[in-house]
Image (cartoon, rainbow, N blue to C red; front, side, top):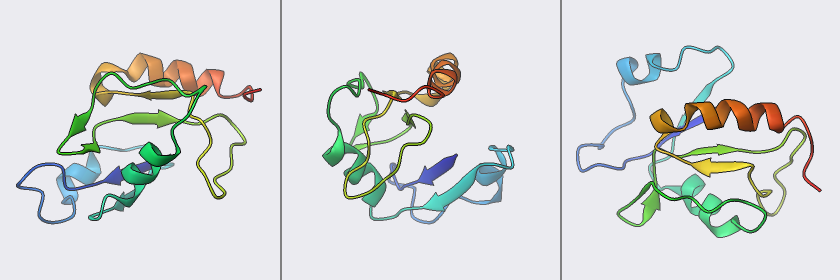
Length: 109
């Protein structure tokens, strides 16, 4: 699991501090700082069916506080694969994240 931190608010001038990073306690989470919004830009560029359309999480021209779940075995080559889940805010879609992770054990056609 990756957590990509990006500057989304005016006050986000620096990478997240120890407190913010400590909110994700699962040892499988790898956290990254992306000040140029490269990941969210790529996620938006590569979005295509059957990936669902998000109904939230756009601010100042970028996605933020969004969960993206890819199917098991998905690989990122020249394009990101279609996601099983692409929505948020994360706090509001935790059940959907869990369901997508379970569903992600089956590959997309």
